[in-house]
Image 1: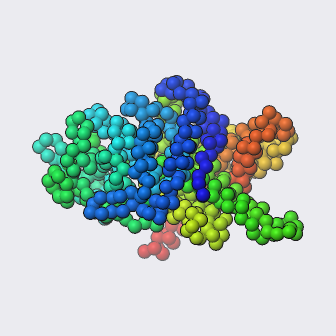
Image 2: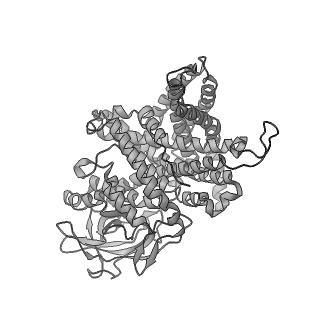
Image 3: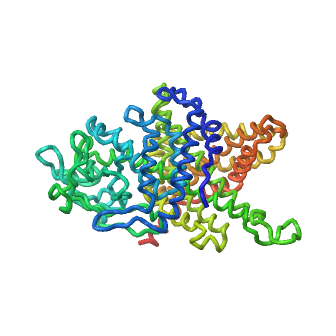
Length: 611
């Protein structure tokens, strides 16, 4: 089936939940308007639905192909990317001063979700290019920015990041790629990189690789890593691609999913280009600070992968709802019927459908919260508020990445389950979502890596300051919810369900934070519970946004059922999703807490049994 962009949902999240109009009053956004944002998202929806979504199944069944170092992308990908570039979509959320359109990240996040839901494999190329643009705009020299960023934003060139090597997966301290200084100030790189997404393809005239490598005198470990720009074709001072660099695609990986996206093994310095032996590169920033610089790109990619999780959950949810609305099977529980009923009348199918909807909507609201924090960190007129919002964004990134990608796997699995035996058949399409989803909790840092980041860098380092601030805000929402639920009205029961489940979940979050703060001296026990800690945080923070959404919907509908928007089907359905999130997802929080606090008692058992 096709993909329908949830435009009404975006309007709610951006305008009613996130306060888009207030954001557009910040410096740098005054030339934008809510109406303009709506028009952009409507055009984005038209484009991805008509041009990108139809290529999703094609990329799965006709994957990218390698031949003698060249890669041919799936049929239609090259033409679609040309349209994507010509439409200006690559530059949507990048600064106007760099050639972008200057829209907020909040708006860009909606467009990125659209693209990912339409075609996850295709979207990976623009995703990584966004990361290269953000990294160079942050740490690149003026010359590097002027030379590389405009063609990247225009979509004439694309970007990658090259970290992983055969002997070094997530442990970048083991990197061996070396960079030899040259008399002209450039460097020659030698080494092999693996798992390089869109490391080679036929969709753009040049590919800009950001590569981690070591200088001859570099100290050992992560402190000796530098960052280099290594283009596929050498770039002249005027910005024109020239001689083929000594960068070569040795092969493509055969993968469980995302078949349309070429995952390349890249050789640097194998003597395959037109510049002699050694790939010519240029140092970005200062020597031996490459990992620090690359984290700019990695954080951008991690947030974007979290949005991919939301997107895939949305796509799988849409297909399950559509199938359940047409599949006749079994008798209804209301009593005898003349024949089989639609499966969406069966209670457990309803449970699965609404759980999927709750996971997708909760993840989207959480990602929007993070995107808004990023926008305010860059554009708020108060320096103090910018600092607070930056700390919030950094805290939220690992949660968005880990929680939303794990939810995508669950949603895709539930979609297969709703389809029953037909879900296990490739022709229905949902099996692709399940296969594609499985990479999301792995690449750009596994869920455990995100959890360790949340615990070590984002909780211990600031003494829980951001977490405590969030707890106070969530407590205020719970108090507001309890007041609203105590008032008479047709939505009283639903608001009471949300309040009843939010109370213990919020208590679990507070306890988890305090427990983890007390475990900083015993890392093995703490890190054994780090993934449950991340998932608990995601459950609660997304649940908070769903509770806020419920209050907005109840107000819009009118608690007596006679409000000015009482007939709006969107608010009624949204409120139902919020209630189902509280019922089906929030109860997970106390269970996660139990896993967290048991860490000290079970760590020794886990260690002994694993040795």
